[in-house]
Image (cartoon, rainbow, N blue to C red; front, side):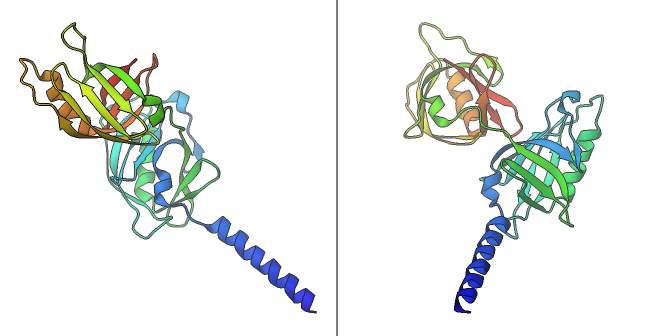
Length: 258
């Protein structure tokens, strides 16, 4: 009898452990990064037929979202009041471009307005859910194309604010990263700018904190770097092997090449 009670207690404990493991909710920090929108309201998204790949990105530090609904870029905020598993979106806005088929985009925007929760849907997958727990939007993680270690060393600034930079014998425009210490320095053709950076998944931030104080006849590159670096929120590989840095509006701020 004692053995039976012992086995029953052990079995109950095991079932409780399994139950807790399977019902453990994702922390909102686990949403950080970019996610492909694979289905809306249970209907698979055929990305090849759309103007752009639909995706949703989470900046969990700032409580913001960014992405593309299939045609237009989207931005907005989110709140996780209520704890793990709870999420709502607010102030979601999109650009105004017209595309041949706006159905997926309209469905994505309407679904985002109804989302009240999220849950794991398997390895690398998340479901955004509605009031009754049904899945409104299915997401699949987009693996990062680069990490902080891949930035190590000196890079040439090819474009800045949409303009191409051409080095001269008198001026070179570079960014040097120290990945281990998470610091960077910029050669601007006049003064050297520096500071720290953070890189988490595809999220990226420059914290500009130092500068030399030389007087130069042309400080246009320096001034532009001071203005634009704080706007960077993410980074990723670009064609040709360079690195692109983007703002939260998905605008290309700067490109670097070896």
